[in-house]
Image 1: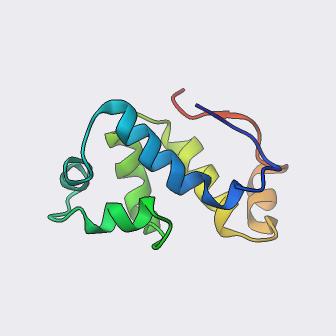
Image 2 (image 1 turned 120 degrees about the vertical axis):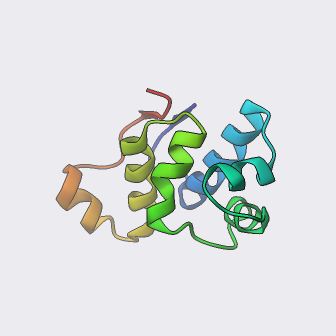
Length: 103
């Protein structure tokens, strides 16, 4: 799964990543929720639908549950959470690179 900056849909990449990867692995929203310590799939459904932002502390848990690289998933999340990317640039020095999030 490759992601690049500059896409008009960049804002929704994090949400799309969660949904697409979960489906790719063949697990339900409820199963993913249980893997990260939740009792209901509502939180996952809202995140995937772009109606809710994921709490930053849950991102490593979700990355692990979906067999994705934690650092790269956090980088994508941070990139999307800072509208001007100033925080991202301060930490990582450039625009979001192409990310193969499984590595």
